[in-house]
Length: 467
Image (cartoon, rainbow, N blue to C red; front, side):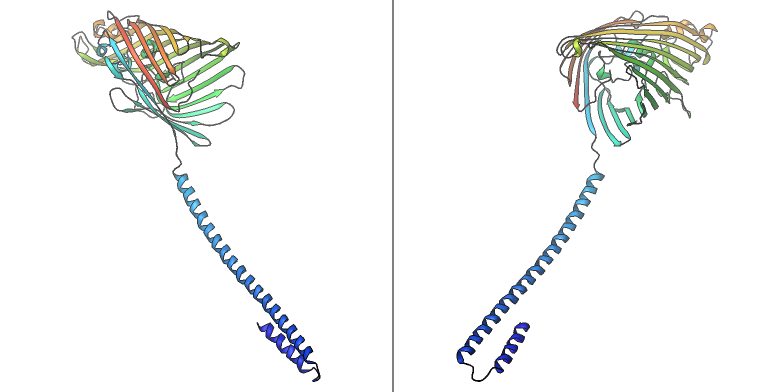
């Protein structure tokens, strides 16, 4: 508006300088031209002012949008941080396992004569309906270098036991892997497998007699897989020796160790094999077992010394053209050799003992061989033979005359054996029903005919089983 006023004053000056005799029509034309110019300038100025107002409005709007975006970004970052702090999302699975057991002999009196594991480790289970060892599995990657797994066993008698709780390396390189915590030992073939992956409802007699059913320990393990076409694996473990043949010694350091090697490969496209050799060394202190002496009194015996066990294992698998969905066959077996020497103490008051101790040595062996054939989809049959030899048992308390053979009935010379047949049906990879019958001659003069009806259900994501 200020510029328009200046223009009007200038125009007036021009008019004042015109000659007086200017024609009226010329004055009129000039006035009209000035009016048009003023109108055009006013319109242009108004348009410029409108553009200015619009530009200022857009700037304010952009600032508001930027402020809103900043607030939104801050909110997203806070939400992401909150999500990250609660991002633990483990793989969860569960194994439901149970059975109906019909046993001729009282399971509370079951024993493997000639061998010393406690009753709870070798018993075939309770009569009638029974919940098996169901498992709850939690696992997840901890970071790019480590993975953690916890397996909680729901015991048949109630309560929860920590079966496995491990951390494992991811990608150490050069074929090496490392594991620590509580885990099943890598010795032999079956020991590292959980019971729901076994081909029979229970462990072979050799596992019961030499490993107390299954060897698990607290410690560390290292493995090395050779970079060869032939499968070649070496491993070593050290641990506390908390379970049989150890005794959970109250000491610093290591009470149990193991080394193992496995080798395997393919024969054509239809056959595969694996063999292995393992050594287990333990130094139990006051490893106890109960017995009944010659007076009929329940006594406690305690062994302290060294236990050394060798295990040789082998397995052969066949499936036509590598397709195991219709037909397949698996033959496996393991041989155990154990030597123990040390001191055996007894709290028996029979004979001249009255609480005594003397030397103790054993040299014992055992084995099993089993075959399982899938004769049509979902259906399998299997046979297993178990055998043990009590071998040489040298008891110093007997040799010295302080006690007699009648004071150690559980260590009487005996070669236990058992024959087992099974039929199972698996409508899917998550479900299995099994019928099993066994004739068990583990105890002297106490043949046990055992019938098992078993179910196994797998819920959730569950890792593939070993070869």
